Image (cartoon, rainbow, N blue to C red; front, side):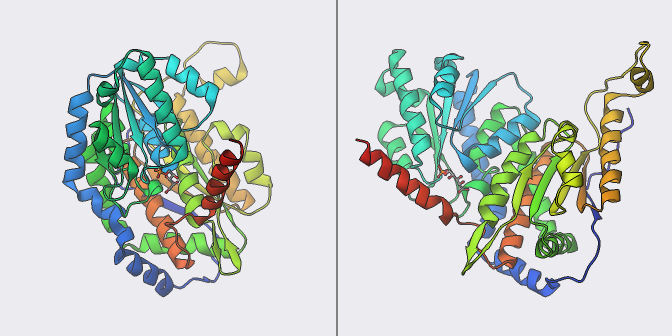
Length: 416
Ligand code: PA5
C-alpha cells in the first residue's frame, strides 16, 4: 500500500483571482481583536490539563459500561457525534439523544440495557428544554426498572457551565458527578472540551494527542498567511455573490464533520447587521456518495457555491477489486483497489469543477486520525471566528434562536 507521509494539511485553491474587497489589514485587525478577547479561550483551553484529568477521572469510574448515551442538542451533541463516527476504536455502543422525537426516544431506550449504561447529559446553559425533557424520560425509565432515586448518580454524569447553571445545582443536590465547559467557550466551539472528551475516551480516542495536535495547529494557523488568504477568499467570493459553502469530505467516516460544520457556519455567520442581513449558507455533503445526488447542482446549478473538497490520502485497509467477471466495467476495475477508485472520483470531480469554473479549495489530510480531525476542527472554528469578525458581526452569539424558544414556552403555557 503506497502511503503518503506528509504531516501537514495541504491547501490547494482553485479560485479566479479578482481584486480583493477585504484588505490584509482588515483581516489582521479581526485576528488581533480575536486573540485579545475571551473568545480565544476555545484555543487556550486546549492546553488546560485539568480539563483532561477531570474527564479521565470520570472515565475511570464508569469505563466498564457497555453503552454510552450522549444527551444534548446542537453543540452538545454534533461534535461528539463527529468524533465517534470518525475514530471509534472500541466495541462500546454509542447512542445520541439529540432530539425530542417521542417514538425515536422510546425505541432507542428499549434497544439496549439501560442499567449497563452511562447517560452523559450535556448542556452548557444547563436549562435547554429538549435536553431536560430527555433527562426526565431517562430518569423515569430508570425508576421503572427498579433503580432508586438515591442511585441515580450511578447512571448520570452531567456537563455544564462551571459558574451559572441550574444543571450544576441539580448535580450537587443529587450527588451526580459533573464536568465543566469553560464559561467563554460556546456550544458549537466546545467539542474539544469535556463535552466531546468523555465520549472520545469511551471510543478509545487518544484525547491528549487530539488536543495537543489541535493546539499546535491553532497556534500556528492563527498567525499564518494561510488564514488571511483563506478568509480573504471566502469573503471576496461572498462579496461577489458566492454565498453558499459546501463541505464535501471524500470519506464516510467524515460525514458527520459536515453536519458539525453546518451548525458552526450557520449559527455563527447568519446575523443581522444593522438593517442588513448577512450569512453564508452551509451545505453538508460527502463523497463519493453525493456525486450521485447534489453534484449535479454544484456543477450546473447557480454559480453561487464555494466547495471545500477534503481528500483523505491514506486509509487503514486495502480492498482489491480483483475479479474475473465478463463485464466491461468490472474488467476495468480489476487492477485497482477501492481506494484507487475513491481517489479517481475525487480528482476526476476536481477536474470537472475546474472546467465549469466552480470555485473550490482542496484540503488534503494524511488520514482520518486524532491529529488530522482536530486540525480540521480548529481550521473551521478559527475561519468561522475570523470571517465573522471581519464582517463585523458577532460569530459567538445566536439571538435569532431565542424568539422561537420563548414562543414555544408560550405555546406550552397556553395549551395547559
Ligand atoms: O452553539 C450553541 O451555543 C448552541 O447551538 C448550543 O450548542 C445549543 O443550543 C445547546 O445549548 P446547551 O448546551 O446550552 O444545552
